[in-house]
Length: 393
Image 1 (tube, helix red, strand yellow):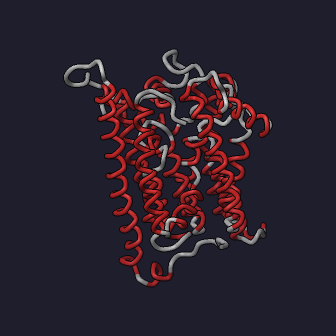
Image 2: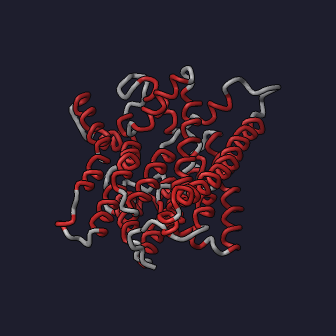
Image 3: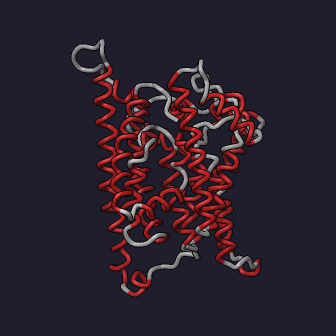
């Protein structure tokens, strides 16, 4: 199945404002239902896990225990940056590795909430996940067909490592931007793609792959004829401005506009290496006899997630979904050329075509039901592991 540039439904054109609102209304209602069920599931499981694992406690849990349980791993750094800035002694020594979009949002919301920055992170991600669900719903219906959106939002809401849609991580902000940018870009509504694209770029470096893929889509819609390039191409340029601004800031503060890459290397040992070397390093961790069980299992999940990501890229090529293939293959080529595979399952969350393929396969009732059952169980597990302080890929 080839994906030609998406067109606006005839019903939306001829039916007036009322018919135009109908698909959005359905998307919003479906997304709100999924958001309510899945966020309640995540928060109830986290609350219950706090109680069940507090073996030495008596009576009520200490005040703040629930919120503190969500402030783990990278979430700590985002809260610190929001509170103190990038180069304060109280922040992570390599904090420039984290892009500014999410910390800026936390800073504003945290002040509104009286300095409760962990709570601000949870609230922000409920809202951002809701936006992401709505645009995924519209994108899936547009690309796959009616009914696909209703399935896709459940698969995102119950994603196995969906804990990162609730905790103070950047996935919800990135997805809100990426899904909307692909939705508008595929429709040729380039000026509407500016803010979503900028949101994706501002939240993480991966946003550049969104812009690259949309640049490919832009030229494809113009049959690769440079004479058809119009002023709307500037939408793609404007979408990159958050990265330019961050680089200018780093140049001003520390003299290195690429400090985010330097901090990745010195803080986490991550740099570009050969793909085979990256695989061998990961395989060594996955087969280790001396590392902690949690880490050995995580390395194995990393390899499985890498294989799934590669499969998504191949499926995009076979279906001739060229724009999504460009995004997936470019992104994973870099991801799997890092020092080792790291957070690859979490990176699957940022693959829009994964949810499009899944929604297509989910038209089969058995696939759909199995996806919901497995997703709910695995997401609950990821919440328990994460809020207990153990590592989740």
